[in-house]
Length: 112
Length: 114
Image (cartoon, rainbow over all chains, first blue to last red; front, side, top):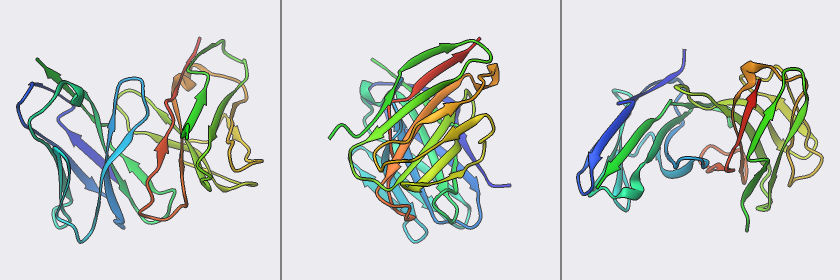
């Protein structure tokens, strides 16, 4: 069964600190992996997309990595800000356009 | 551009009532979809459409109907609401159903069924 598992479920860090969120997937076939940020009461917004051949991709203070061999991805947030408080969702596309498998998300709280 | 808009933002229904969740996009996107988001679970696809006049079922379609008469609008109808349909509903759109195409999500509708 295709699954996307994210860890930790929730995380609290202090402003200015770094953190890393994990995404493990058992999806086949694999097309791409996308990280979304979802602010409370809002819809998800795309941060990065990773294809099979990409290992690392950055978007400002967000850096995503992908290890297609171990089927793992991570999202590293550098120098966290209060505005980083949100849920971060890992989504893996498996083949067709309607074949998106969503993780349950990691809820990040950045405290001053 | 307003992007993807959804109305209402909040709704409370009684069991057995019907209602329509509205979704509209002004980006001329062909692909639109409806998801529900429940605590501790990933988003699940309810229905989707690859263009006006074309709809198909997703992972959890039971109890929901959709239609796509225009490119802009993709309403979701709850036929007879049940407490199990209490959830947050998101509409999304993308330019085309291609694999690398980003989906843009609306702000969501929080539905409570009593």
